Image 1: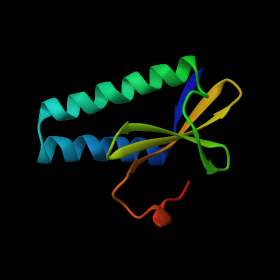
Image 2: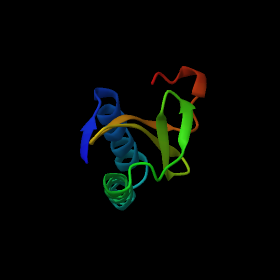
Image 3: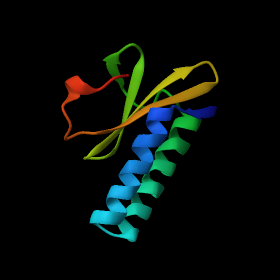
Length: 95
């Protein structure tokens, strides 16, 4: 499976890392990066392992309780849509 990052997913990812570096620690940021890498490896091997979100065939993988990855599987490609901060208003999410 090929992983393709949307502009929004990449921006969300780097914003989360920046926040962790600024407000927590380098170790916390590295843990987040490792958690994302682990989830992406699982998705590459078994893309349908995580549940559907209920929105247009988009699946959701909880990275940690604060962050959920939304992604879509199309053929041999996995499109990363957003890394969503679960404390934000879900009505404001644009998938």
